[in-house]
Length: 466
Image (cartoon, rainbow, N blue to C red):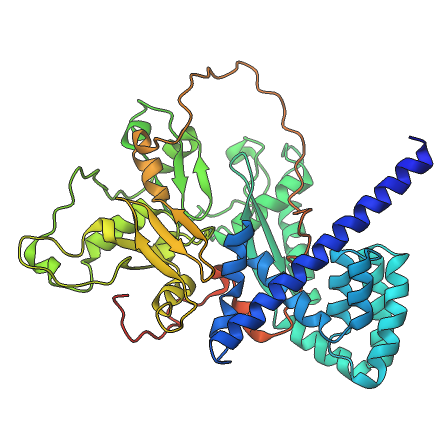
């Protein structure tokens, strides 16, 4: 294949991928519309369409919600839909157009859309966004001010787990506030002495943690202690995190990983170091599930039992949800029914941790014909059936860390630790398959379609035991 043929093949493949992306957007948008209709237009049915789409193709609910909002935005943009379907523009550029002109009045929308589609064919998403902002600001200055105020309402900070015990901390802030944070971190980074061995990037990262732990000052890493001319920092506050550690790892008998709530595996050395200043709660491994008579007759499990369930679950038990169980509610998998004395009742196997959003999804599942169904299939397996009949199971994630021998699906191979570990290659934290997780949601309902954006306590249930 010649160079020209190779470039042509690349362009054709990119266009075919864009065609598939457009089909996906239309499908998830239609699913959202149908679930809204099933729920009688009260807004709650459509709100869980992202959850259904997420488990169907194994993407995050945030990505599914972004696909829905792009589809909603394209409802008013026929030229953009046509260019997207033909492969002339891809998902990222369709998102830029839908976000940039979604609020323009009909009098100017058609003309601006036509010009933007033509510009999108010749520009990458970043340049297209700049062009769209320039045109929209000139055509609609009052609307630009309103959109800026709406955008400020979308401010947010969050973390994303990456490999090797690290996490990405990212945020969307008003420009002035973001610059204030950046300059404060730079000021703290420059306050150490000249012998501090850290790079500027490392200092900024450490300074951000120092802002949160109460130190208010970056501790110098020169190692000279009293001989360092840099200002002394206050002792940091201990981190408010939860870690599940198998007892063998804690005692140094095993190197099985610990579980950091909301993140995932943490290597044994780090877990033992953190444990030096930790408070402990013992979670026993139960061969049986005893329940006394008094608790069996209570619809609400005892606090110690809820703590045990949260430790064993580790995460919200909805497929794909990454909300820590510590921030979730504990309820019955199958409807609670008091039993005769001595026969058990609120047993651990029938309890599960669910974030506020998915707790509501389960509680509302019996109110429509096309609803989710939940059942307990095995001792620690929870089975979710989607409105279209697809089945997805979840297990107690935390138990796999607390009791490593219970992780029977793990490969049973011997692999000695290498004496020299090769340096890891740089890994991008951008999801190249769905580069759309920073968009602005068109409908206010869609902005709360991810569990991490759900405010605790914002739920109303007729039957709290469900």
